[in-house]
Length: 139
Image (tube, rainbow, N blue to C red; front, side, top):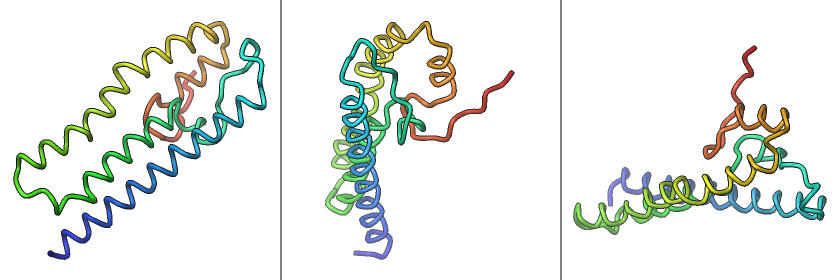
């Protein structure tokens, strides 16, 4: 085992931990928000906490969990084929989420809040998937 292997191993567990914490915090914030506004019909859209940095921070966290697991088990892969098989999960998770769940949820949210200028400002300035600072609003 080389120093590089240990670095990749530790990096993997750090990525995993960050992803797990991000997903857990996002889910907890969403649950607290839903409890604060129990009436679904009159509930505003969430834009607090991690949700101010991403419209779906829980999905970003989940993908980081998969990426972290790949790197943390990097030393166990003996062949290129093992690496490629392990990478399926790393790429499948974000692609699946971005092609199935995310468009469906975005459609429902657009339908519910589409009349709100505040919602469109949030949507156009906030990343759908990655947890990033908001984009500046241009006049």
